Length: 139
Image (tube, rainbow, N blue to C red; front, side, top):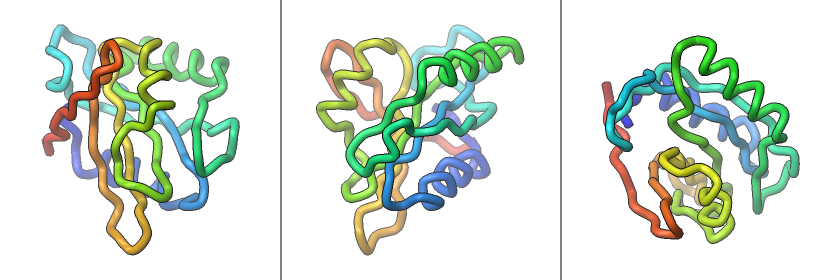
């Protein structure tokens, strides 16, 4: 995904607002036929983690639908779902892999907040249980 420094900072800032619990949201991209991993991010939309937990996240289905509709109304599409890992590196957990099965073609951006380290942002495509890192390119 091509994503501006400003939007990267927005995702990281959200994660740092509650470093004890996973935060989550979605990233809108330009609506086009770009292959997965090369779309251009145009907006970050915060969501609420209904679990308020350091171990898992879930966006309320009604809120997720509202965000999805808002993004489409603006002429964009859902490009990524983001969340933080408060105690570990930004790599998908088995829970993330299982959840991703319902979202083919959507990137999974994870902010790692491992103790004593700077926040680290990475993105993955998770398809049929296979995890593949995709670059987050500055634009």
